[in-house]
Length: 492
Image 1: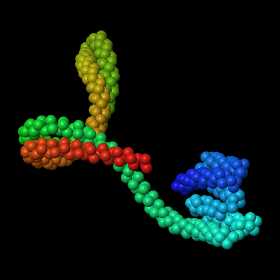
Image 2: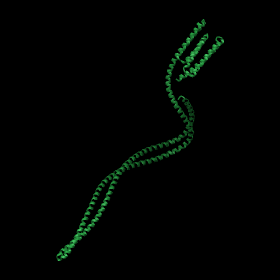
Image 3: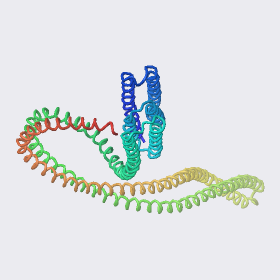
Image 4: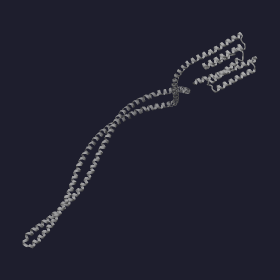
């Protein structure tokens, strides 16, 4: 569409320019008619005024819409009217030739309908002029008749040629248009790829230019650094050897760590087994403690019962003591009564004395029993208190045993987790051993490569000088590439 607009604008401009020239030729011809005395100044002035008005109108139309079709119709109609006016205001036969450049000029629009209408109008105008010359002006000599024949034949040939040429051109243009459309589609695909490549080329060109600039800047640094690298390479060889020794030492440490990790794993398993045995022992101890608690409870109850029995014994002893005292009083009274009786009561006095002695002995034994019972009650009270404390201690011991069992269980779980972690550590240490062996191998390879690098430093120096020259050439190429990318940017 943009190309059509541009072409129409160019054709309109060309038609306007050629119309100016044709109008100028008409004006010059009219002035020549004045010089020959065939036209008056007034007639020519009117004609020139019409031409100037026509020229102004089409110039205005062109300026207002350079790409429009209004200019084509305005210019063609105006010029045709002037052409008709020119033919009917002179008897010269050759005036019809003004239409030839006019027809060729409007052929550029490739508008078949327009050419047919315009050609028909031109043929009719020339036919009418020939009839006007023959029948009205009476310019009908044999020579003029030949001129009229040539005129009509020329006009018809020009019109027919214009129509056929337009039709043929349109047909060719349509074929070309189809071919161009197909080519355009292909070109659009190609252009998309080209534009994409151009965009990437622009980015890469800038990147290459920047990289080459940086490479150029670093080139001198590389030259200076090569000497340092040469010295550093020697140190690198020594460092690689030292690193190899250190790596072997690390390998020994890692192996020792691996052995220690294995021992730790074995200790963890042993500890878990011992903890399991401890849990079993605690459980057995808990059972024994329950039995002991039952026995303590039985002893405690027996001691309480013993305390109660001792109290009963004490009460009996007190009763015996009271009976003994009463018996002693009775024996004393019996002795007094036997003394009063004299010889008759002598035997009874002996019995009373024995009873008194037995009462005294019973009192003494009762006192001793009372003392023993008091001591026994004290011992029983102390035993009950001790059993109470023992029972409390047993309760605390039971709680401690239960807590100990729980601690053993938790410790066992923790030790299992520790064992799992130790297993993981062992695996990692074994993996580290393998990696360290590879590291030793790599370190030895690095040492060998460092020696080779030391040999290659001299070659690198020469290559660096060569690279500097290549960088200069690459910089020139990159500059041209950047300029090309900038030129292609307008199509992106």
